[in-house]
Length: 129
Image (cartoon, rainbow, N blue to C red; front, side, top):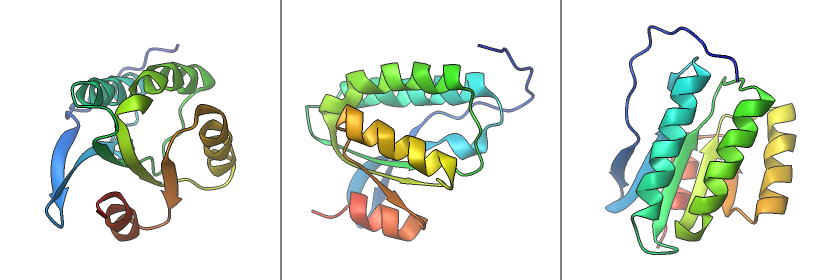
């Protein structure tokens, strides 16, 4: 994996609430550095694994990110371990080729992630009872 020099500040994934329901926000769109994206994603997966199976709701923003295939593979491997903890998951920011790749990932991983075009619709989905 290519190491990138970045002046970006790392921000941890956050537990947030929407309509009184807790979810993890994974905001990869805030980074241009692959290393920070991977760190953020890995930390979110660790947060998921600390909770009971099928109990975690996730909102992910990947708007305008362009990770390398190595970074995608690395995140896929990390994410597979966390699948058991996910109750529902929504993602925004996929267009074109990214959407196709995500649909392939969903099909083969069994991930419960759903693709949305707006944050409001994604959060409504993730936080429905």
